[in-house]
Length: 349
Image 1 (tube, helix red, strand yellow):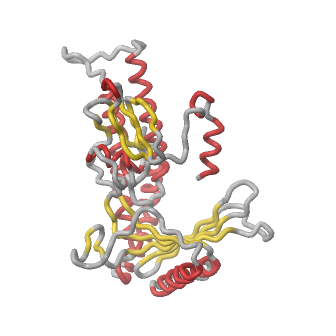
Image 2: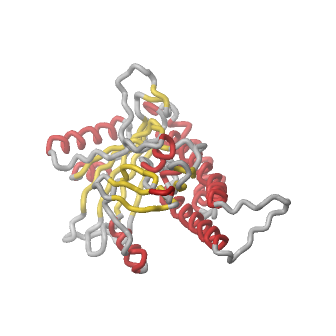
Image 3: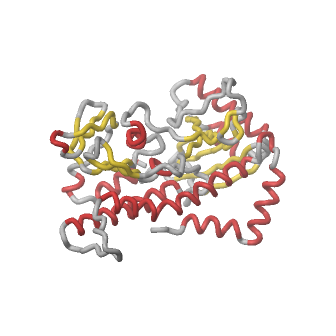
């Protein structure tokens, strides 16, 4: 991610890059003097603004989304826990050894879970990284619903819990992941070596947002407007690989609508309505159009990705693993699987 951000940062014109600040965490949004927009306050006691538009592209645990809902920022709006967990095992490659010329990713189905292993680029002149992933259902949940409200089962925090500095935790993470893979009868001839040699383990829960929540809203007594982008607006399970793609499409669509609004405000274009009422030239109208353009696409992907995530695990202890195998074989044969993947990947702007 840092490498990618660095490439984008280098392409920005100075008037934009000089105003970018990294390493900030939003603590509050307050009304500026004389109702002149809002000020953003950060945890390092700095303040920026005033702004008339705050764009929350701050991920599934969005502080801006939380502020839109409650007028306060405490821990971020975490979203809804899906009851699906993912464990990661990561090991850096050795530049002295032969390394593959291209990235790879292989998926293995088991009874009650599935796994992936892959090789990924790790930046220029660095050896590739090897990763193993284990996806399984939380035994304390049925989908997003806790089996027993009085049980001790607790949804995992979205913030990943790295186990890399403590040797005991490393060994526990390795042993637990290997045991789960074997218990689920997941083929481990390439996966086991990655897990056994991994020097970093972490686990997270899969979260999604209520797709019927609004993406934009007036804030601070109408002094400004907040709008959401990417996971902050529509966090979705990752099983179609569309989270980042949809966020980029959001950004493009929102940018286009803001440009339209600015052109209208400068008198470069004139909005003409069919009826006799005064046209709505407010910023809120353009933000609503942005949401309407992107909502159906992201809603559909959220539904398909959720279904796919639950189906691929095969159920607790492989309850419907055989159905999953037959279903995927049939869908692949008739071309439905390919159509679903391509439809999700096709930009809808």
